[in-house]
Figure 1: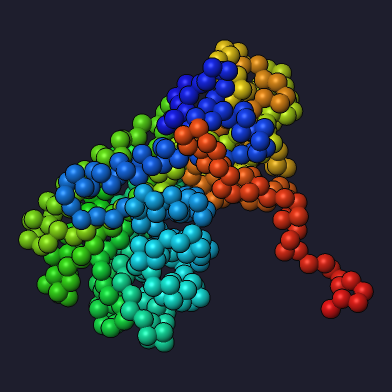
Figure 2 (figure 1 turned 45 degrees about the vertical axis):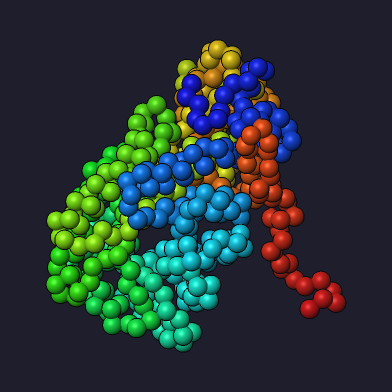
Length: 440
């Protein structure tokens, strides 16, 4: 069994994370429950930063908060000296509510609303990543109206396709994101932005995909960008002060996954950017990256209580848990795979192969197919590993199931950072069909 971070089996044969018994966590906070290994998140953040610093290059490491956004998580990112990537007004509001320094916030997205952009300008955030021509017009107009000046990056699609699931690749030419690098769009965008006195063109951004296990895609993308910089230098007198190569660094979900150590991605990026800069005889740009999943993905574990079972003779045994696609939609959405274990019986020998079903009223609500476990009993606690990215952030109220609580564990202590939703929460925004007598 592969245990991440501080996870281990304690003397009771229980799964322990951050020095805290997960069986006790399930008793105290209920299930389903997201548990985050804070020490592992800190370790990952420091690995990225220390690698850049050891290589002596200017950089920013921005946590891609779409992976998991909450006030406590944003504050943890700030404690570790990270910048922050947000993609909506809600993520921006969360960051500001958490007291995150606005000058270290980068705002992404392919369809930022006028209200969202105005909110970003009012907060004086550090950078807006412009995604399309419409946004150039809207942002320029808002800056004039509000008498604001803002630093911007232009997002490009470099035509490099990461070898991942179609739903999570974003760097190929056929993409909803960014200006095409090869058909003249980016040159037109550079010219437009440079003619806007309220927009400071800081540099270029790209993101080639997600769950990437090699460095080749980043090398190719950087090569394509720097191949254009020589043209931009002559035509527009534009040399990027920042090159943002995005994120997408892979993690281990199952034994089939073989990710690189995080420092390897950084070392290769620095090597390539340095090499191209020297060749073009331009100042070394500041290198930005945006890890999300690789910071929090394998730091998260979801705890479930096991309930009903169903045996289909000669086919399979279904074991149902008290969550499912309402707290982890990734298996249903794009066939994501996970590993799991019985948190209360970690030392018991595996004796059967079962499939873990969620409780939602959907045939496709399956969390894990063909998982080896000890003989399962109702009331056992199932731990599903590596659910820290896109679990809570994509959680939903399908079937009016309340979203789980979130707990941070570190140094033997547990801290509730997101409360469990209640049934009252579920109906708090509902309005009746007809007003009560005497009510407006």
